[in-house]
Length: 291
Image (cartoon, rainbow, N blue to C red; front, side, top):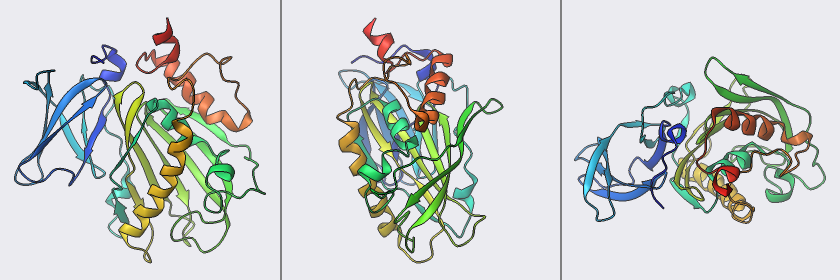
């Protein structure tokens, strides 16, 4: 695959690695949006990203930011910043990186899976869902135009074990936040302090239109478990999702509302697809590639 020419996709910040993935003084090769790149780390914690061609010759140097345990770069001129997530700056939280997991699907399928509460009771049995409590209660979606983000608010769902720190089942309160076509997160209330939420992100590296790496940094309120314990719990959830994601067809995302008929529980997916259609993104979109 050659690098996409889609300016909408090229102008987004995308993850391309996680901090600590590369030894000091080393580099590794990967790909974003069909473009091969090389990521360098100096003797400390400074990173560079350079485009490479098919012969591995180095070319243009790309912008770099390191935030939320991830390395971000862009092929274009970003129209939005890397999002602000204040929970990662709170000193009493456990910040966990979780590394990356490869998934053979569209980046947008990953976003929609993250937004979807309906699958909890069938895929994440006895943790995020229970087979006898499957109803997705009504919630609201918002397009926050000041930051151009899609939010789902007033979400609640019964969960037997909402997190590693959970003590039994509970009705868990969620807010979902889609920050870009390649990044999504949720705020989840599971602690004894009703005013504080766990912040769980998925930053997606779209290697190609149907192959991704997913990074899941978290800023967690938990004084009982180690970072390794929290990461193990999150990775086990994500691996359950991967089995479903890699069997969805088509892997590319259709935006025609008649292609995949939604239900009331899919309100966040409907809002997400409308948002993608309005921005006229073509990378990874079924109709754009099938034409």
